[in-house]
Length: 178
Image (cartoon, rainbow, N blue to C red; front, side):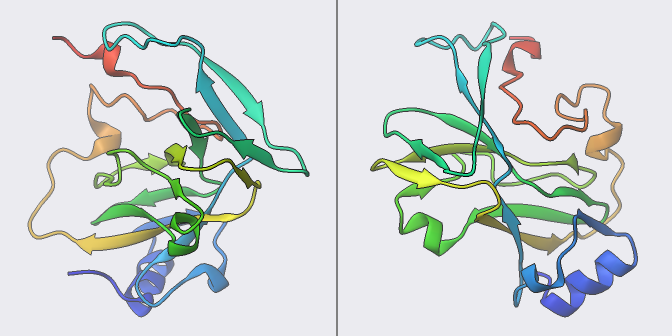
């Protein structure tokens, strides 16, 4: 079951969902709009290795914006820090962003109960497109859970993305044993 605007607002008031900064005008019928932060990152190496820590270079989006190029993977970040304690957040792109040829995530659209952080975006585009810090970039949709949770993300020993940040975070696949 997807939460409606009334249910999302009630969950925020009760502390079951946290959005910082919270802006009432960003609450949609059944979602909450999130915005592109001022930091992007790109991987340094042409070939990435899943077993190694791949280094990134940070880009700061200035007032003039930044032109994304096709064929490049950009890591972005939401301005909003979020927490979910009894629902599952899904991050989806806004239709206006998609109509510019921008994808905001390759595979990681679902969060976990207990996820507490900003969202790293896996951004790609089909044509060169100028983006701006603070522009609406996606929307969070919240699904109710059924049953008890024993393994909240923010309390898992092996959770890799728990350090609070305002910057995009590169893949931590290398921390897995395989």
